[in-house]
Length: 224
Picture 1 (cartoon, helix red, strand yellow):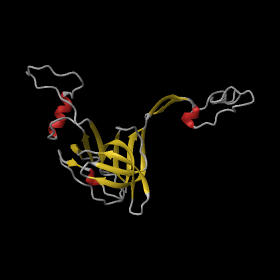
Picture 2 (picture 1 turned 180 degrees about the vertical axis):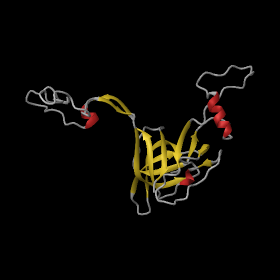
Picture 3 (picture 1 turned 135 degrees about the vertical axis):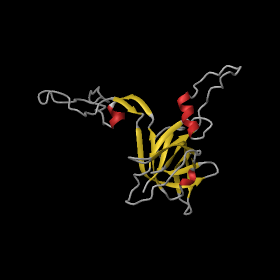
Picture 4 (picture 1 turned 90 degrees about the horizontal axis):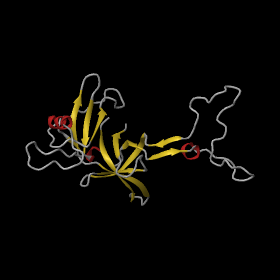
């Protein structure tokens, strides 16, 4: 199921032909280069987004500036696809999992670039991103517990209370909702509608919200 790698710019609103106000998430997806094509047991294509910095050529008089630079493996992988600089983000898209039997599987070549013109207004897509990290949180924020009473002498307002009977089973059962790390998880939202595609600025307007902070990396894939 082919898609594209992009960056979440933020949210805005647009108006349709009926004058209705539609909240949209704006995804900036500059052209993605095909860096690898896999055939055999399954068919997939690897796309690259952005560009990394590379070190200066050996023998140069000037010292290489500080900061992370792409390693030789990344540079070599990019050169096989005909790219000048290694992509900043690499993601693989499965091609043979499209719904429906006998569906035609698209073919791609190394170095080919995919743009936002893959999509058009009215398409249904699913967007995968990494949710905002919230750190260590209690059960009220993490799981939506109601908490204890605020009056009549109660002092345990946001605590989980009893977490298991002491007689039987005399232990805390697996899967009990407890305080812990919240957020920073991979999340896929399905059945989202593409409201607008701006090919000149490499922008996709998707109805509703998607997971992740501003400038977070997201994958936008077609959905049958």
